[in-house]
Image (cartoon, rainbow, N blue to C red; front, top):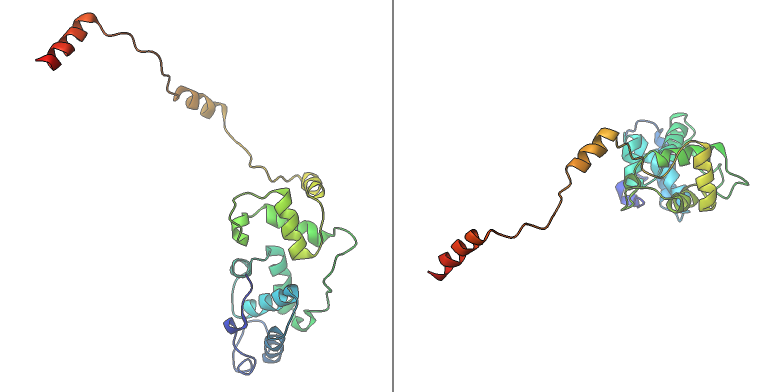
Length: 198
């Protein structure tokens, strides 16, 4: 769900374009890099900063790129700090262990619908959280480990059923009961037969 370079001004026009966060030099430099063959994760970092520079909100950026709120927030803050040139200094690769950034990203995901990230389903599973985070953060961990982390943070992928006792009782009262109907009275049956015969 990555942007194509034609959704950004070309690098020649970058200096004349006005932005919210980047200097003309930074914008031109990032746009030039965007036209090269970049790893998807590096491309996403640049796209986040360029979209933020265009005035897009964090929510809009997440929707456009399908990235986590945490990732968008981080790279927007890098651009705001004037450090856009450091887009490649945080290497991509598997850290030795789950870090604070990973946990924050996991928490953000669980608190938002998978549909906000372009998935067709409504609720996260440990399997999908694991897949998404492996793609997003470069850290692949098992579904069991995801479940353990969620439990430690007091979170869950399961929908909570908050049905009160009163709701349960009213649902029970609303049930329809089907019983055998009593046989019709002979006199009523005779009237019906006579009606159809005549």
